Amino acid sequence: MAIMNVNPTRMQLTKLKKQLATAVRGHKMLKDKRDELMRQFLDLVRENKELREKVEKELQNCNSHFVNASAVMSKEALDASLMSPKQQVNIKVSSRNVMSVEIPQFSANKRTNDSGDIFPYGFAFTSFELDDAVMSLNELLPDLIKLAEIEKSCELMSSEIEKTRRRVNSLEHVMIPRYQDTIKYISMKLEENDRSSRTRLMKVKDMLLDKAHNYSGH
Amino acid sequence: MAKNIAVIGDGESIKGFSAIGLDIFPCDDNEEIPRLFRRIADSDNYGIIFMTEEMFALAEKERRRYEEKITPAVIPIPGVKANSGIGTKRLSSFVEQAVGSDIIFNN
Image (tube, rainbow over all chains, first blue to last red; front, side, top):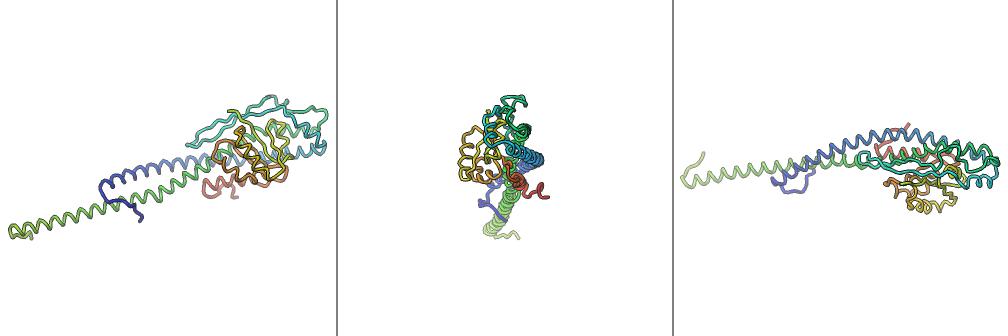
């Protein structure tokens, strides 16, 4: 039994009882927070997993298009065609609060909205493989941004869940039992003091009576 | 606030991204990566930094400083070379951190 290093007084007892009540309430709330975070996190991770698999597959696809293009075109010509991009992507970053965890939200902003207008080169001297590559990469962009948003959220949430879990466990297995034990210790000590002072009083009374009237209570 | 998207990786893997409007930082010198990454991350211009898996592994120490921040989000993507599965491993480490054991990727 681990008890705190406190004086066994009535004042200390009321103080500890109040602290215990706070700890119990805090424990309940943190536990709710943990459960809700966990539920949302698991949903998010499942989504993340699917999205990542899809993105990785698509990227592999794009890469193979690029490899094909570079096989048909010279390296210089390929680099030159991609050198001066027409498109510029901005993202607006805002944040959303999920159970006190700030998670990011990205929304993309493109300079040109026409998806046919993304090619930074003329079609005359480039291979159609390159068109494919650029087009499929462009189609993948929303997914890539979504993936970044979800994966960052997962990262932030997982560390928050870990912290909350630790807090819940420390309250449940260390703090609250310690409060309870200390409260029990103090109340037992106080009762013990009570009994000992009562017997002492009885004894003193006996002695006084004996002295005054030569009378014994028994 | 409007931010851009950066892509770090070997030139071969990432040159396509410049065509669709992302800022690319080709780097073929592995020792340069941590410094390059820090420069990009500290500039505060980038909301998302995509890194090819090899580069992602090389900048591990530098990445840690940005783990708790909302931006930049540092995300591994497969490069031209074979997919090494770092992305999935990273996800499974999140699950492990949060739950205590991996309950989603263990099959």
